[in-house]
Image (cartoon, rainbow, N blue to C red):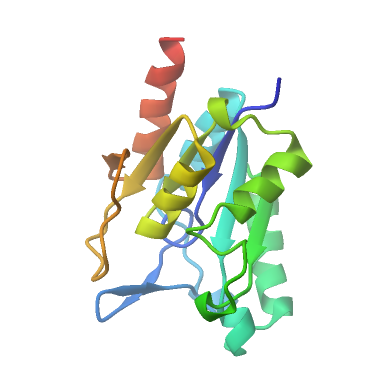
Length: 180
């Protein structure tokens, strides 16, 4: 019997994505990082329900040189020390690298499952892009929540619930858990 977790995308779920021409981008400098209102409360609620809060994030700016590992490490250290997070798993690759860890593939989730002893059947995902939703679907998670910012990119397909925030997802997760 594994542990329950909520897998969280980073940009657009934890911190604001930088939107240019309708497309979301990650902050590349620490000064660009802005937590989304209510995220601390949502993470605390999930932790109080017994979930591990696990960030799974594509960060291709490492491969392109737009961001250094030192800067990314500082951002993640700050998040780990500021928020109720248990782990952050990063894919640094571009989609052209065809790695197994870049979402929509479930490789990052698989890494977390193995390292943290997570049971997919008792776990959830909150993301803001089609690739987050698809990664959760491929992993066979209990439920997937999609924060729809109306980005100029494809919408997710398949089974998921649309929410306005991490906090709303936490409320829905609580209601699901009450029925069990």
